[in-house]
Image (cartoon, rainbow, N blue to C red; front, top):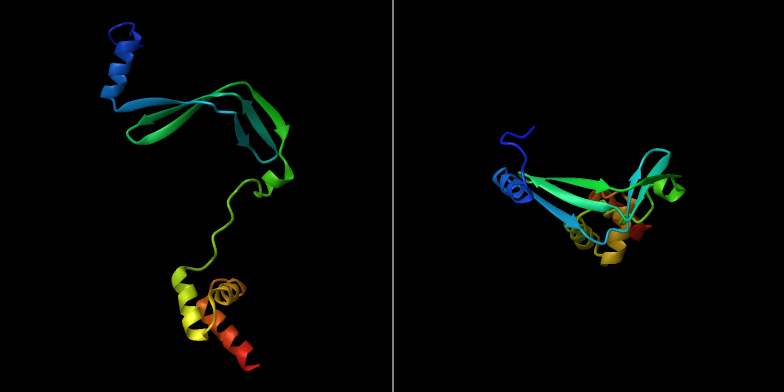
Length: 131
């Protein structure tokens, strides 16, 4: 029970503002998918609200969930996820290019083969050149 009796909408917004709490509706949401190990809960056309309290965002999703089996691509994590970043940095590429005297594409290929280890990539390229 909130002290002071019932609150109207205006008083509720004032109290939330004092507590550092904001809400924001996300419009035009087509679906929300909650993936579990063996299945997915799908909420079509849900109402989604972001509640922010002291910088921490909480998502409130309202809708009727439907369960469906998890698809193999989603289970494997190969859905719409972005490609993994290469296991090396720009500095690694520059180092391999400089020490092995190769172009960027060859340096990047050698780094991929070497698991992102610049020294190993350089040695591999130099050994290839001598052999």
